[in-house]
Length: 330
Image (tube, one colour):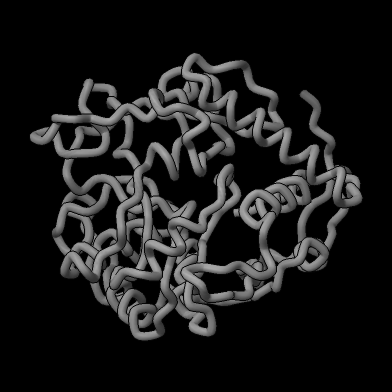
């Protein structure tokens, strides 16, 4: 989901730098591992548009920044989806390209893969999660997103957040997830297989299918659920438009965590959203991109992320020659 404009270089350089300042060789539990940066691209995403309407090669930009570029098709094609509703409506949700994130499960030459998107900003090392997941039988470590602000709080109308996922690659698991996607029906009211899992952004994409797939598993075969307030904090309000807690069913409203009360310095990874308007920010509180130089927020979480982003950028530019993308100021 890279920006298709002159901000691409800025976005990708800061993304890679924030998550990978210590890339190369890392040691976990006494074992030394090499690290590799991958960029998974669909075939039609090779070219980008520059600030003056010119086109340039996204692959070359990514390679300059140290990524191994993996151009992929699929992994699921429309003709292979058995359910009519899913086949006819997935493109109005996140589209089949969103399923490219599942390719991480097939990187079996690596013991662990971190899937991260352009909205996520990592502010602290992730090694503790690597160690915890490596020592467990769990297949992944993820956070759960909030249910939509304007919907009734239900147990199943929120999904795995795919902006930051820690995955143990497994070819059999990969194939099972894809087969589940191809063969399971999606109902607009009752969700995946009538389970109730659905009705949130991304429900017909990677977020929805992973949430449904793992709901069928035994606890030891389900992902470790990380604290959203620490690993996916976007400063969003914790109550929906009806005053219900957005991270649980309306019948289970006790102990509702308010991520806006998290100490900013404790946050490991946050999220800064693209394409949010002033009205949405006013209602939901979510953080927008730092390079927009937004106004200060009341909780201090967004402002902390913006400060960290600009500090990281300053450090990056001191180390690496700036290639000429848009220079943000604050």
